[in-house]
Length: 288
Ligand SMILES: Cc1ncc(C[n+]2csc(CCOP(=O)(O)OP(=O)(O)O)c2C)c(N)n1
Ligand code: SF4
Ligand SMILES: [Mg+2]
Image (tube, rainbow, N blue to C red; front, side):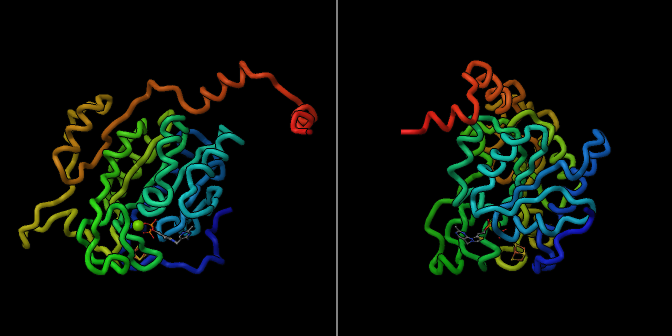
């Protein structure tokens, strides 16, 4: 099928960062298709609920398989897809609210399993779809519809959280740098285990951070985002942590561990030593 969902009546606001992420994801899936011959339809996009998750209906060109699930539950759904068919390439698309607020509890367990999926998290520091409430990545003190006197909580640092939870591939990117984002998503999809590409994807309506991220010479604003130096050893978790301690938002591949067993090899090992039962035997074992 080569048309996107004509029945889903949703449009991103002009300038929304998610446009760039969409282009990058389309390009990454196409690149993978060109390199491996694997059909676009054999890629599965599992989407969270939010402006970001709506991407699953807005992808253009050849369509991957799409699942628009439940708020915060992209990872359990992605795990189900991988268990049913390990051959499929599964990409999660979710927002900072979906992934880090309601969906937070799923990151640790999937990092522990090293689930072979790639999560593309669009961080705009706000709940965009529901009209601008604060999220875990909103700045402390930020005035939003849910924090009229300023957000009282400390801001979550997602990159440091992913490292702490043991995610085996962690990259940080900007929605406006489409080419480099596409290449990072390809690398993350090929990573043998759980990969997260955390993307700064500004919300032009409720939290326009383009200027803060990129800086402005005219206004004397130093850019918050900076490129990870070429010599960074992404296999070294200490070096990754040191980069984070420099502050701001490092862009690039922060950490990559390809030595850990992935989810599928863990499942295969257990399957080998477990007794296999027929459906009848399984049902009989539940009978009282
Ligand atoms: C169980 C449940 N709780 C709350 C909501 C309402 N809700 C929909 S999207 C959303 C937050 C979206 O924020 P984010 O994930 O950052 O996505 P964005 O719109 O910013 O891309 C919330 C709270 C819901 N749909 N389901
Ligand atoms: S509300 Fe924000 S996140 Fe949602 S489409 Fe508009 S600009 Fe994008
Ligand atoms: Mg958001």
